[in-house]
Length: 464
Ligand SMILES: Cc1cc2nc3c(=O)[nH]c(=O)nc-3n(C[C@H](O)[C@H](O)[C@H](O)COP(=O)(O)OP(=O)(O)OC[C@H]3O[C@@H](n4cnc5c(N)ncnc54)[C@H](O)[C@@H]3O)c2cc1C
Image (cartoon, rainbow, N blue to C red; front, side, top):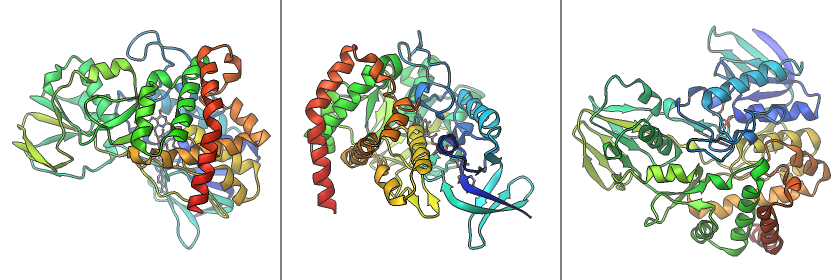
């Protein structure tokens, strides 16, 4: 059994672990050991369905020190006019290069792939899943749990409903391997994976009438046009401004969502249905138009049992047949988490500190860990937030995001880091002060920032 020593033992080399470590070593001379049970960095992207793409532009995803893609605006396809979005293979290739060409050559980072982290009273143990070898790690500073906001994805998840013999239930990954066309497709789930799957089938030429979409809930979605960085940063500044205004002016998630819908930030698939959820999914108008072609939408709750002749749901049942392919899109994706302090004496637990941006959050946590001493101060600068999934929770989710950004902006070094970080979607706004959308955003912020801060203070006083 080997024994090694390090300053930080980082468990998980997905987007969170990679952005954290990249920021930590940029700001300090810390020694780091990274461990992941997958053989390579990249986390869930290594097992993603082949037609997945980032929700957000590549321009602000990944690690701070290296560009993902080429910051190009797509000229055709459903993403036309918007910054490019990487595929899963682009992302895994990128993380491999970040590790092999930057982190390891820095001399500060050692990577243990295909190894399970096993805690325990005898210390920190890494167990190779290939040969069973064990390594004991003596940690001088902190254990970093970069698995806490781990994604739940279709290919690694067990459906929570019963499946009778003879029923074809597949993850979206297997759609590309079907030996013959089924009698029809039943898509199970209401989240972004189900939308990606429906869009892909329609793009392949499948008749919308051959697709049945079991959608237990409708969700609020974000219009991709409003999520654009760099030369289109005015769009994102307007989102921030409308978000702050809605936070200041409304007292519940429903009103918040309607205000954002009026502002053109939120959209919904079916305007006659009041959505109950918000998970941060982002779609373009072209994708929305495409998805609206599917008229066979089943709103009878979640699936309880799949049989060859019927599918039983919480509020009824629908017919099926043995030739039907059921595509399981019911994995949670980004899961709700129990919030905990990010910084503790012997542990860092990276969580979201910005609304919706995993990599920007993790890099922020790494930078704060490297640049401040006291955990209390670090926690003040980085209040965590989680996505519970319901629109009712959107104000609770937004509060820590807004207050954390305000606190970090008040610290000159963190403000300078943030303004320069490629992971920050509003980077470079100062170069676009002649953009009418940027000016409109500053106008809205000028009127609503103060009331939003006062509301945060009131909420903090109430919960104290
Ligand atoms: C399809 C999809 C698209 C998304 N698009 C975006 C987007 O555009 N923008 C955005 O900000 N977010 C997006 N997200 C949200 C997502 O949370 C982040 O993008 C991010 O990839 C999550 O990274 P992670 O490192 O937290 O988790 P993961 O990628 O799940 O990585 C966690 C890692 O920890 C390892 N691990 C767990 N336990 C152990 C153990 N005991 N020992 C060793 N290793 C362990 C796992 O093997 C895994 O590799 C998306 C999520 C999904 C599912």
